[in-house]
Image (cartoon, rainbow, N blue to C red; front, side):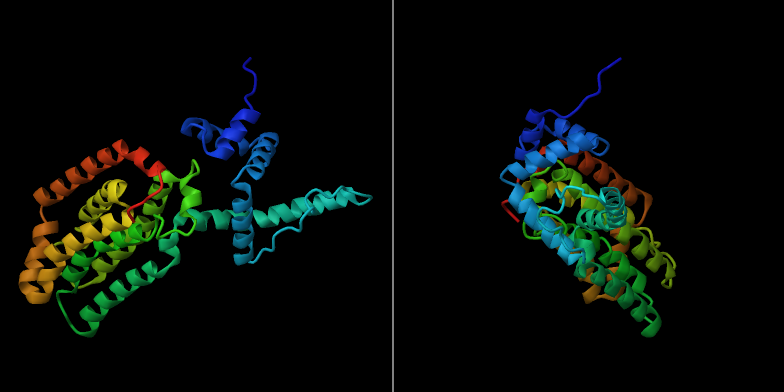
Length: 306
């Protein structure tokens, strides 16, 4: 029978210092979810390291922001007295009550600043503007406008989700095994989980025009542009990459809509409609995904360009 594996003191200190290999760090993080003694060993190593004070400060500020006061110094180490059993039960009840709060805090951190800022408001304003044009002003080309603008919204969400200028905790999170590309993909998925259903359903509810693209025609272009922004972001930073690609799309697709609505609608169809065009976007998305896998290690370092 294989002996159970536990976190050694050496691995715990290397993890706290950020020098543990990524595979070892992932194994450690998975193991401490079910092993209390190893979790305590790692916590002690982190508190004793240089990041201990910073993490404690961040934890205190986060608990205060969420309405849960931080524990008093020494309270966790208080010895049980005559009422030790009832105190232990109360502690377990308190821990169970605070578990949903901690889960919510982790979810908010993983989702990223995009879902907690003005970006969601921008998505709502775009949808509201499209409906106002279609049903308030009687403008029949509202769906084409929405198709032209929709690929820009995931790019904007990615731009404000990750990077030293977007995330106030970026230096801390990027230095942990949970940071880097894994965190960036989680936040990108959160952005897409908002964009895809809302914009597609909103487009489907707008009046269609015979011969022009359907409401879902923007999905592959939007996905390809988002992946391209992640790949380019590995070189120049997410914000710069999203701004560059978004500016190019705006000039090529959105710009003509202002000059001539009819010609602009034809231009939108040129970029999103037809099997050949959609197939090209699908291939571009696959190529960008492969390049992102090759560039995954670049996200382990702090951004310096955005």
